[in-house]
Length: 111
Image (cartoon, rainbow, N blue to C red):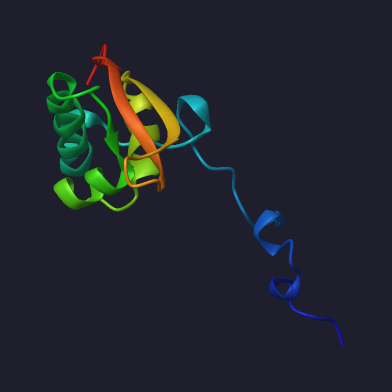
């Protein structure tokens, strides 16, 4: 008896004839518009507000706690697709724990 395809460890990378190609945006992913999405706007405003504080960076944890958005890496990618230039650095905080730090370097050119 033949196993179901989902039993394969490569199931998520397999493509079946019945699947149609996705319509993707620039960069290979569909992204939401900054002007129309509350989660993107929250994170964008938080990053923008951090520019005047300390070194201007915020951690993944900061973003989650202050905005309530949990998929931080996805939102950062979508903000970049919307024209924001956001730097990302992995370093240790004062407490010695490794964290990702994000900084808004450039405002979006379109929204």
